[in-house]
Amino acid sequence: MSNYWPVGNLDAIPKTSEITATLIISLRNESENISRLVLAIMGITYPKIEIILVDDHSEDETFRKLQQSFAGFEQIKTLSNPGKGKKAAIDYAISVSKGEIILTSDADCFWESSWVERILQNFEDPNIRLVAGPVLPKQGEGLLSRFQLIEWASILLVTNFGFGIHKPITCSAANLAYRRTAFEDVGGFQGNEKNPSGDDEFLLKKIVAKFGATSVLYRPYKEYLVFTEPEANWKALIFQKIRWAGKWKSHASFSHMAFSLIPFIFQLVWLSTFLFLFEGKIGFLTFSLLWSFKILAESLAFQRILRSLEYPFRLADVVKTSLIHPFYVVGIGMGILTGKYTWKGRGNRRSD
Image 1: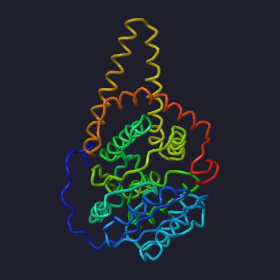
Image 2: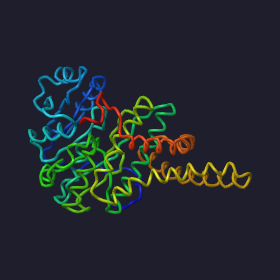
Image 3: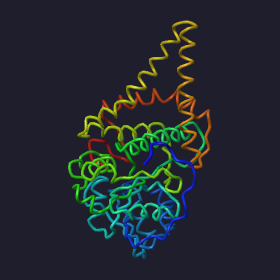
Image 4: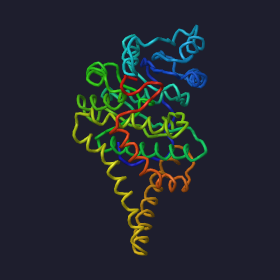
């Protein structure tokens, strides 16, 4: 796949084959999202799919609501995780599933009714073992919501570039599918069980290592888009990113670990440009030119991504995000060093 961001609509979905699929979603303390999840699941149009929802020791009404909402649906199973953590929940679901293709998403996500068909058509090629798609927060107002939109757009840019040069480094389990046989051939999550995150990235790296970079695809089109709920406050957002970014230490690849440090180092460099403001008129001019170039480059990239996914682009969002982001990334970096966070009622000293 090319490393540029595509523009335009995809053709109509061709007649889907007889591929069987299983959609797996692990849930923990997601009671408030069950109603939306029910609508998303009921909207799926693909007939040959089973759905497995695994409650990961929720402390709220999640499991009870799941059982009530899906009682009587033969294709939908609601289970309790016999282990602990998201990886254990997915591993258990796969062990009792029947589908040839495993799809994963999250409880706070929703998608177009044809999402499953879109994903599965890629597996008509027997050489494809994993397919990933874009994820964006649902449209909202306010600085926090718009900040998350721009940040997610930057993640999509990096993801598409990595797949495009056949060196994929990241993907999101909120929009992911892979062959059951590929999962089994690489040993599933074996070796990464204790890391609270990375059920997506570690599996991606293992599949690429065994089958090659051409065995995985990234589909950056609006027809593949999965929507997620933005985090409700800055603390939750920072804890989420510390959880995600903290897995860089577990990657065996030195290049992957080095690449993970680049954003932190890059933002430190941008923070250092504020020193120019103490250097008189020349310093102020230098600072202004550097930041104007930064904002212009980001605007050109994010504008193409967001508009291709039919999201509104606002220059003011890029300006605000550009100014906040260096402090935000450095803060996350410091959080990773301290190694502490809380996520869905669990600290990182325990598996999530």
